[in-house]
Length: 250
Picture 1 (cartoon, rainbow, N blue to C red):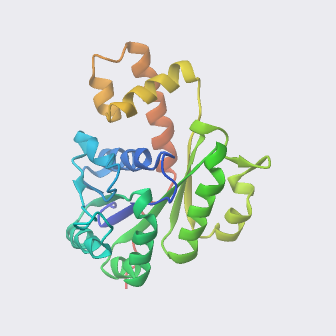
Picture 2 (picture 1 turned 180 degrees about the horizontal axis):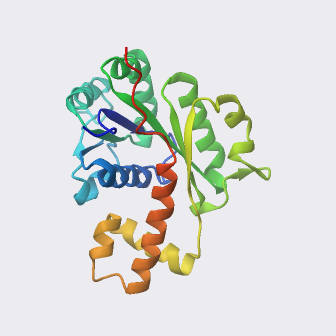
């Protein structure tokens, strides 16, 4: 059995358009490389982006009722599937369902339930530079306040440096307050927009995994070299996070 068995990775952020689904797809690709047994779930009722990555074969969980309002009880479907999953589960939760999903998880003590069933639970959240920084920090903070699971913070530099008043996230009050809860930090580094940027944007726009892009004739030799470098940079950071640490025996 793999050390990655029985893990659940929730990706949650209340601000849309910050790369949340991208980070979920990167998690799925990383864990597929590590253990092969990965199941993906998409609960975003508006932009089911993870489902559009055909290679990941994500299951879409419909959380809307007949009048297009969010039905919190629909998350029960997701929980049933998470308990059945023996490998790694990656869940991409939509920005529009951020508050209902958080309320559901708190009300039903989801993290405690999963952990009691022998699963290791992680929550991933994205911080992005630019105008959305404050909103993403707020979303991360709310999550840290209510969920007991370890958190992985993704710093997405696509819109600029993830800094406030010249201070990095690691220098922020949020990090200092919750650093014991933060399992790791992954930086999506901003590189040359005309080379690395175009290659990454093309891959993401077409909902391709790294492996698909590297096999595609639509990417040239140098584009593939840059994508390999980007994949290595991200996966090496994920290697530094103790995802495979065994649960303590009862």
